[in-house]
Image (tube, rainbow, N blue to C red; front, side, top):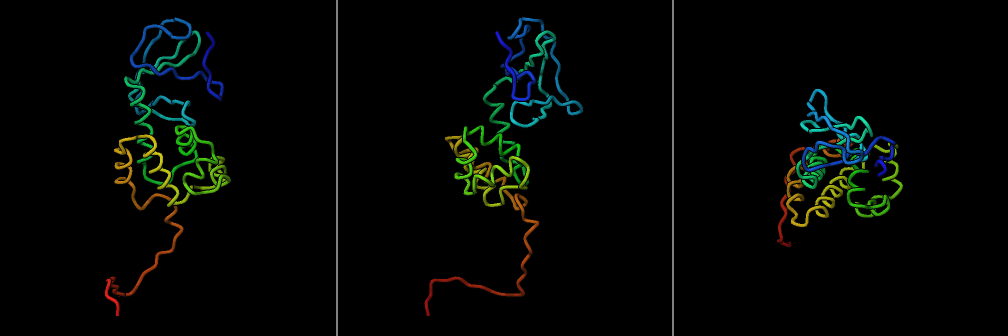
Length: 189
């Protein structure tokens, strides 16, 4: 059996529901450790370095395959998705790549989904542009939440977590009005 490798040449992490005594790749004995906040385990398989604490991992001494015991693999991936969607601040380039790949979308299809150009998404992913912008960032989070969870519970949680610090608000000038009072009504004069 051949080793599974990620794009960067490092051994791919094998996600398992529970600890096993032997490597799935070469049947060597494994020694497990639990990551801590001082020394988190880094999972490179998500398109960016995902640092996880409290994760039981084992690296095979023979084939260097990394095993991670996560309990429920699907719930683990959903947890990563939810943490990214509910994180304050603009989505980073790595997070956009992860979310786009999670939905199995090309850069062009993702751009159409959130209402920006394909070139803009490419510039963000390459680090040449800072963010999607406030409106597109929020729309991306909501669309991804809606597509990822048919019950829309995730979308409701994301909606309640969105606040004013997402995006590029600091670039806007604050407009102050001096004592204007506006009444909106249906009376016509």
